[in-house]
Length: 552
Image 1 (cartoon, rainbow, N blue to C red):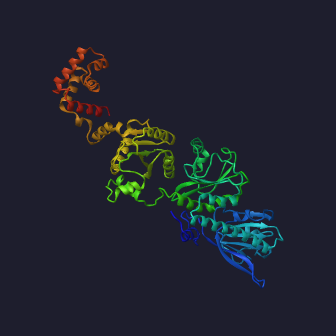
Image 2 (spheres, one colour):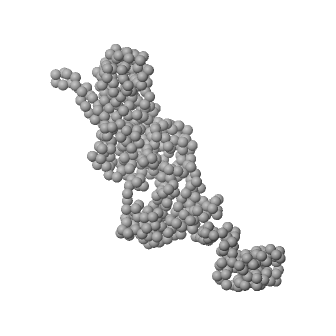
Image 3 (cartoon, helix red, strand yellow):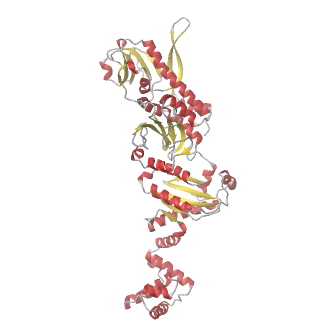
């Protein structure tokens, strides 16, 4: 996704509150009125554009020694778009009002929520209405206070301009991280769900390490497993507002903001509390700039987030729709770095765990990208589809990797046969599904099912679904079963053992615990009753399939 100047402006400078995709109103243009003087010395206000802020951020960037009292109730709403020196006669929810307590009416006349910086003691009536306030000690110069607050807006306006420039120039994510560090004054990082480190700025101490972070690398496997198995980490994955991660894992606290795109979890923006204590406004700031981080990440990694691609379309036509791809087939495959004659494996992953739903599937999909060689993955109807490619033939270690993944993350996996003609991928998709469904019913204790090991079970299952078992029993076999019931013999069982051991008398008689003469007599009697010759291939094939049905 390439972002141009106009696009960036359109994305981040919408004029209406709630213009972002999640409706939080976190981004948008605002009007900041800076107090200036003309040549004659008259006070004037100059309008500029910048980020919308909130009272949490304003408070932490004012001189805290001057603050005597405060009440802030909306730390993650960004709604302030101008500053006014006011008397309380007119209130606007989007305005940060600065006033001397002496100039305020005793009873405010407003239906809107009020955001107020008050010099002196705030009238009691203001505590009884929706009012966020910061009280400054009496005697503070109002013009100086106004300019101080305006400088906060100017600071964040400058930050926004620099962030937009990073997006327009497609700058590395660490460039954004360095801007964030200026405000947070602590190490900053952004990692994907599988802990690919897309941004890492340690800041002043280059030797500082948070586990083994390094830009554009993956967290080592052992460290990754420690993090993803941590209950606190799991509990915070779905939170839409910033939070604080305890020090028990790292030895220091982390403030974090999860980033989502179209309800999918993209990753986590983090600041480590190592250089200075975290402030309330740090959490607000993380949320404020999270959209910029998201857009920077999507500019680099737009994979599997709904963008239409020829290769995506081709794969879905060949597999899910079972239609031949009519466009130029080989060039599209080559554009992905694959060849028609390469060796492929279709893998179908399913889970019965509620923990593996929705955004978690995207996380697992990305993790498979991490641990496997050349592959293509997509999610369809709560299942992960994985196509593996091996140009030099079959890699048997793949089954060990899949077994380990399935056990760790609670998946069951069906694998097709290895194949060479990618245009037949749809057929092998069905093989993988059949392997999963048949294998899971037959061997529920296993995790990985190979199609070739369950072909017979599938044939039998399909036949039994169409008709009951009795339908397939030929009259000669019914006669043999009737004979056993009337005479108390075990000819049917003897026939089964004979077939299972390919007619080898020595093995069969040992299993049956009978003398060779008895075994041969039973075989002769079976042939007499049924009229079958047991050395006939088709007769033996029919009987073996029938016994599989009976045992199913």
